[in-house]
Amino acid sequence: MKLFKSLAVGLAATVLSVGVAQADSYPDRPIGLVVSYGAGGATDFQARLVTQVATNKEYLGQPMYILNKPGAGGRVGWNWLATEADTDGYTVGAYNIPHFIAQSIKGGVKYSRDSFEPIANWGEDPAVVIVGADSQFNSMADLLSFAKANPGKLTTSGAGLFVGHHIAALQIEKACGCKLAYIPTKGGGAAALKAVIAGDVLAGVNNLSDAYRARKSGSVKILGVADLKRNEDFLPDVPTLRETGLDVDNSSVNYRGIMVPKGTPQEVIDVLAAKVPEMFANKKRVAKKMKAGGSPMNIMTREEVQKMWAEREEYLKELLKGL
Image 1 (cartoon, helix red, strand yellow):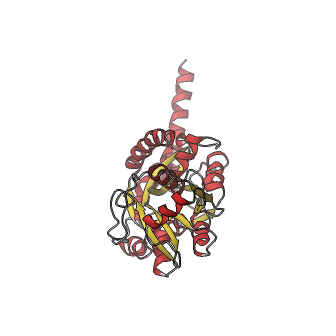
Image 2 (cartoon, helix red, strand yellow):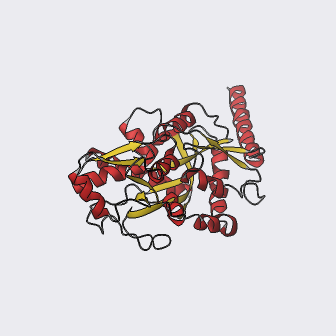
Image 3 (tube, helix red, strand yellow):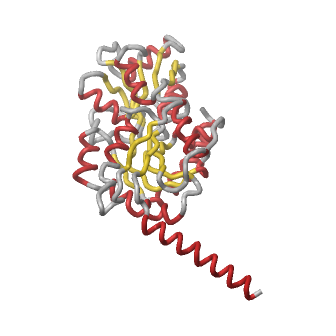
């Protein structure tokens, strides 16, 4: 019995010392950040900005590089992260809420909220309704008038199924009593935006950040914001959809941040949870560039994100029943 107890104590001490050593040395090589959308879209663009200071000694002391794994509105990348990625802390992922939670609620994917551990949130990006710069539509009233007169003929691009764009489109349909022809594009928000600019579709639901940059270049018009209040920082002149008479709330607002696959050592999670929010808060190299790129920020800690995920999941279960 004494021998068994001493062996057990020795094993526990060894595991503890390995954990401490891992925390002390982590990270000792570059970290890959999986982005489940294509290069050039809002998630990819912002992920590259918020991680560029990772190499600084006061943060992680190692670079973070982007691994784009687009497809099926994010399903390809999140399926891979949940089932195939290493759990040693050197492969992390960018999350999009409501996207991956809504997809897991609807089914057909290999992940759920419990497949991942949140680290920190960097952004809060509302969905917006856009049309091409030379479009006949100049307001939501124009757009919805056409949709009501031509059921199913208002072709509308978005980044995928049951992502924020799709949820906003479903809410618009329900609120106006009309039918849109929602078209999920391959390649995420960047491809959906290009479809509007090229005239392949009559309208689109996209991210404020992508649309903001496109409007600055003269490529699109932004007709409405799917949020509870106007975005005074970037689009003070654009009404919310509620202001235009549609009962559409902030369900489609895109929260973005970093997570790790379940099974990642707690010691690694603790290091990332302490340092990543500090990276996001870097005023000169992150916040300033995010603002210049039209990307709204909302920094949350691991504990705050855990609460947000849980609340969003319960809310989305009820919302999606009615859509």
